[in-house]
Structures are given as structure tokens and as C-alpha cells.
Image 1 (cartoon, rainbow, N blue to C red):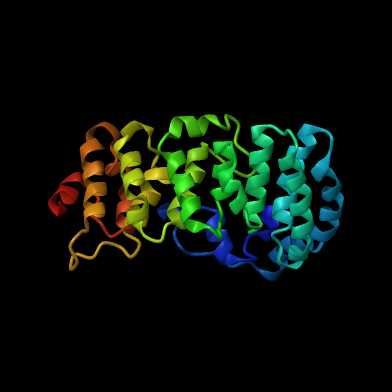
Image 2 (image 1 turned 90 degrees about the vertical axis):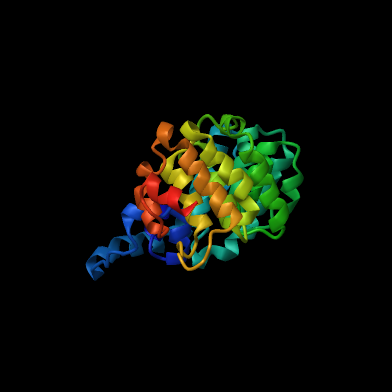
Length: 275
């Protein structure tokens, strides 16, 4: 409820939280004043809800401890509740020192990152799953080290997906999808992620359009393809991977909307001509 009520409150954050896809377009529906009454009413009770949730952050019941941050995270992302983040973060950090499970410790690291608290110390955690969750961001004080952690996790996607057979709270799909998206956002240029990104596309059948191939394509062409400028090496490598795997995966035809969004030809012959 808190997450849904917050939608539209911060458009920049919404674009980060809800992955944009070409089929969704860029337009946002305008709501009538009476339609906004419900989300505004929900926002007004966030403080009361957080008062109710906070005692359960350190519950003795493991199932409750997992559920509580799932509620607290979207509540405390509200602009008016930012002053409550340090206390909640301190409570959750006590769980990192306890003998918690991988899932519990990773969920805590993820919550701390969502609240934009510093998780740099967790990038050296002994558990790679905790390290990856600490690196997810959305922002990070130690950007280069966090990116290295994410890229390392993407080099072994099957192992990474196996960390959480059941998705962590508020993370949908295979865990590698979240790791890849965070890496693409954290990278200052496509060149930083190109070797791993090209490998994902070259893997063919293990790649998914809207969660992997499409976002990778747009990161390689953030301003769209410009025929007046020659392709750089990393862009050529990526497009070659699409061409080489196209017959078995339909990677170009199946990504037509993404290729169009990137200003590229939408068929194999057109892409091959660029190479």
C-alpha cells in the first residue's frame, strides 16, 4: 500500500523503481483531484503505520523479521519520514551482527541501500549475496567497488540466481535482473559494463528481452544511434552478439521495440549493414 501510494510522488524515483519499457511509452496519465484523494489519504497515515511496523524489525520470529522491512522500506522512503531512517537502519544493522540467514542479512543490506544509507562496509562481507545486495544502490559512496561486485555476480548468473530461489521482498524475477539493472545504472559509461553485457546477450537463450537484452541495448545507445557518428568498438561487439545469436533466439525481431527506441534498424539485415 505504501509503495502504491507513493507512485507519482517523485517521478524521477518512479522511473528508477518501475522499469521503463518501450511499449509503455513516456506519457503519464493525469489524475483528477478526486482520484488523488485516496493516495493522499494513504500518505497521510504513513507515520502511524511506521509506528506500528518498527517494533517488528527486530522480532524474535524470523518470518516476521523478513516481513517487517518489506513494509518499512517503502514507508520510510516518504520525504516526510526521512528523519526516521537512521533509527530504523540502526535496528536493522543489529541483525547483520547476529547469526542470521543469508536471506535475512541480504534483505537488510538491500533495505539500507534503498534508504541511501552507506553500505560500503558490506561490500567486503564474506557472503557474496550480501555484497551484491549492498552494491545495488540506487546511489553508492564507493561506486567503482560496488560496480565491481555487481559485475562479478553477473559473470556467474546461474549461481547468482540460486542465492534467492524465492525473490527477496520487493524484488521481482530472477535476482540477476536486479543486479544487471543496478550495474547499468551505476556505470558511468557502457564501456565499464560492456564485457559482461555482451556476454549476457551472447548467451542467447538465457537472456530475456525486457529484463536483459533491451536495457543493455539502451545503455549502449543512451542518446540513440546517430548515423553521422561511427559505432564504437563496444557498440559493434554488442550488435555482433545480437546478429550471431539471432537465428536461435530471435534476439533482434524479439527486441524490435527496443531497437526502435535506440534509433537502430529493427531487422537482422539492417543491423548487419551497420557492421
